[in-house]
Amino acid sequence: MDSRTALVEDLLYRFPHVPREAVFKEDLLRGGIAFDESALSDTANEASGDVKPKSYFIFSFDHGTLPELGAAALRRPPEEIVLTGGPYDLRRTVVSVRVNPASPYRVAADEDGVLGLYLDGTRIADVGLPPMPDYYRHTLENGKSVMEVAPTIQWGYLIYLTVFRVCQYFGAKEECQYCDINHNWRQHKAAGRPYTGVKDVEEVLEALAIIDKYDTAKASTAYTLTGGAITSHIGGRDEADFYGQYAKAIEERFPGRWIGKVVAQALPKADVQRFKDYGVQIYHPNYEVWDRRLFELYCPGKERYVGRDEWHRRILDSADVFGPRNVIPNFVAGVEMAEPFGFTTVDEAIASTTEGLRFFMSHGITPRFTTWCPEPTTPLGKANPQGAPLEYHIRLLEAYAATMEEYGLTSPPGYGPAGPGRAVFSVSSFMDSISA
Image (cartoon, rainbow, N blue to C red; front, side):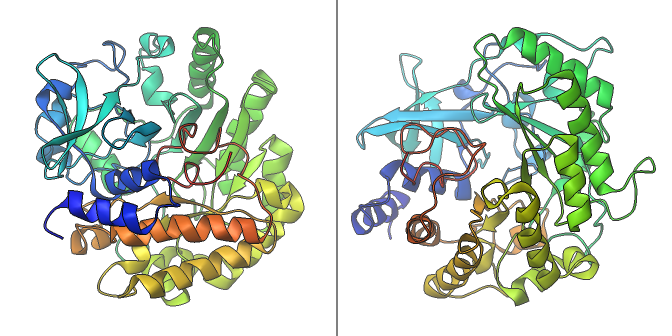
């Protein structure tokens, strides 16, 4: 194709049953967005300004390091954008911001100061920015910002509690090859930004109390507890007890206020039961990539400490504890095609990923996925700066919806509304592409 516009329009024509909003959203997530300086906030302090700034809630989700992002590193871009209208008549579409100064997509203001999304220089959608929530304007007693301790994403739906900001899978022989959690920690510390490594339970509760007080519309509906893998202990606690302590404290302080979710390793059934006992309602034991060879290559720490087959057995076992509908493992969509080890054709990659979907969905478990952002400090990002082909992502949406229909499954809980124009899940289009 001569241009990105031609590529996108070809896919829109070939896959008319995939929502057009999802096609653009996947392209923005896989390839990033450039921001004109007119579209950046002047938020030097994350508790001020009119626009909710990008919080870097766990990974960088950028196509460059902070020093490479220019003005976007100093004047933070928004956490998310919402697209509407334009020549494609887009329904309301929430997209997580992944900064890429070289992207053919650019957010800029027109001569009247109205923001739009431009592709190859042509305006294709109106752009809305997330308003600064009232709770971000208040600080904890120790001066920390709510955004640092308990940022919200998905247009305010989800409180994202990354309570352990690094991963004990460390170094080339253990780190997942697409993951920049450890680098993201290092770059924020190097830039002098506040970026708490292990969040204090009482600080989390204080931040949640501020959110609960000022979120008068009750837009925040769920929280996710997550962070890096724990292979030994933190403060004398293993992984189940470390993450579980936060859930226990939250549920005791705010019973029933939010849907409690935890993203952790696939743990033995007794440990999973502890999560349930602590008050967690949804468990995300992410399986990352389905293919055996790629899992071993891309997730060496997980293969070494647990192993792929045992990981999958534990996912199925966890359904006995939480119920299949409340076990929602994530995979990183696109790494299947990463050079030099990945599949070389979209057909092969989709066949492999669909095999994994059918395995889990046949047991009543509905996986979800995050669209791979090739962060440049990771081995796979460095080798594959363009990520996976857009066609792969569009055909994955097609296969995902078809497999859900095959097994009679509906959209998973804890992700807000489903359907184009309604979904708020911002880091992939799976919720935009399935029926409400």
